[in-house]
Every structure is written in structure tokens, then in C-alpha cells.
Length: 75
Image (cartoon, rainbow, N blue to C red; front, side, top):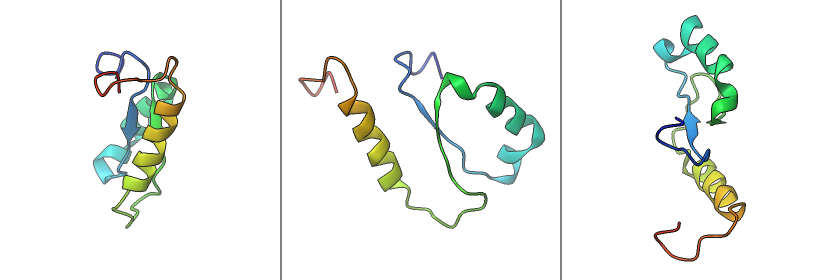
């Protein structure tokens, strides 16, 4: 995540699929949770349209940028 999002604004989405919720994966996520943001999603959630959560997180990140983006390339 630090390579792809060196600005610290990366967000990880855990879909809670069985292989992704294994003890090894869960332990790794807990160990590295301070390295990146994480969308919280209930286990086996039927909620497939998470666009509102992503939009809210994106808007929050853009609003908190300093200095604020002034061009589409900055954004």
C-alpha cells in the first residue's frame, strides 16, 4: 500500500470472503492496520453497492488535502 499510495491516502476494502478472512489474513491486517485506511464491511454482507462509502471517503480525503487540489491533475 505504501508503494501504490505513498501519500497515505490509500484505502483497503476487505470483502470478507472466506479466504480473505482466514486467521493468517486477519492477523496480517491487524498487524498492518496503521499502514492504511480500511473500509469496514460486515462479514458476508449482502451490501454490494458500497459506492456511497467510497464516495464519502474520497470526499473526506479531498477536503482534508493541504493545499487543496486546484486542477484535475492535482486531484
